[in-house]
Amino acid sequence: MAARIFLFVGHPRTTSLSHGMADAYQRGAERAGAEIRRMHLSDMAFDPDLTEGYHSRKTLEPCLEEWRENTLWAGHLVWAYPQWWGGMPAKMKGVIDRSFLPGFAMRYHDKGPWWDRLLAGRSADILMTSDAPPLWDALTYHRAAKNQVERTVLNFAGVKPVRTLQFGTIKGAPEARISKWLKQVEARGETMAQKRA
Image (tube, rainbow, N blue to C red; front, side, top):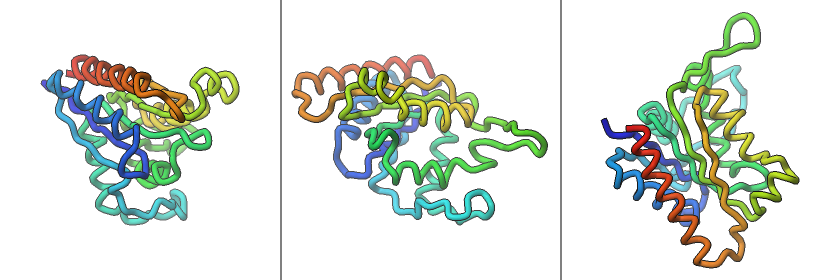
């Protein structure tokens, strides 16, 4: 059975290195026979504000319904986005806030602080770009953006394992370095398509 991969480009612009990373990953995965579904944050129109938290529900816009459907369909998730101010772009965070709701991503127990992880059985790759060099990010900020997406979002919902591939410094990176990163991402796509088949 072919691997089922949902690629989500979480950059709010219509063109970016995040898009290029997703293209490279898709090439590798399709070469290994994977089925791909793909969405771009830049195409999504929705209210990103979870105004009332979990106290009342907003009706999900069609793009969020599609995003959730693709997440449930996939065995492997790939999110490509830039690290901005130690985390994901605000509009991308809005997708998570509005979509990862009780009954979809998790179910809290009536008694006690525990929960069921409703997206268990899936794995994920994070393709994160940053202007901070990854080593500096690790030493100075303790990989805050990596911890956010891996531990407090995906692991919380049961998605494991999650691997974050962080690329930087993006600003001023020569073409040869970018080409090397894209080849690395393409190889990762092929490998994961084979593993998840």
